[in-house]
Length: 157
Image (spheres, rainbow, N blue to C red):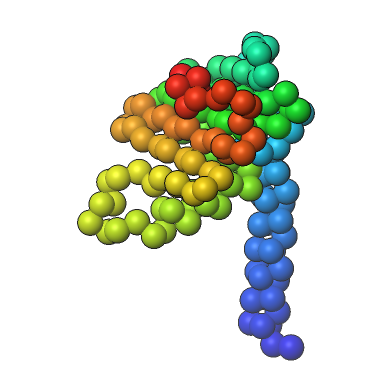
């Protein structure tokens, strides 16, 4: 095997290993279970405050940069919604978990005439809305089938 081929093979193996390492850390977040919230808190370096409510619990995180992240769990402990706002975007790969790929796909298929419009995902069982400008970003992501009875998007504010 030539040296160039060995280098290419080594790079390919490294890329695969790196992507597995990244994706294994992205299991937490939206759609995950309540213990994933502690992993998100640690990864984001945030403080955490839990507020139990009827049929759900809200976990509010304050990030070091002043941003706020909230994760909402249903009665079974599944994370059905995530919101964020503040001066910088949090680690969306961690917060959205396996649903981060849907946001990436939405970014790739946008009409080039509307490049400045943030990516949005509106699927039957996944909604991700993002927005903002330099210095302030926000987002909402939720899975309707995991939301508790009587849930309204207005409850995420």
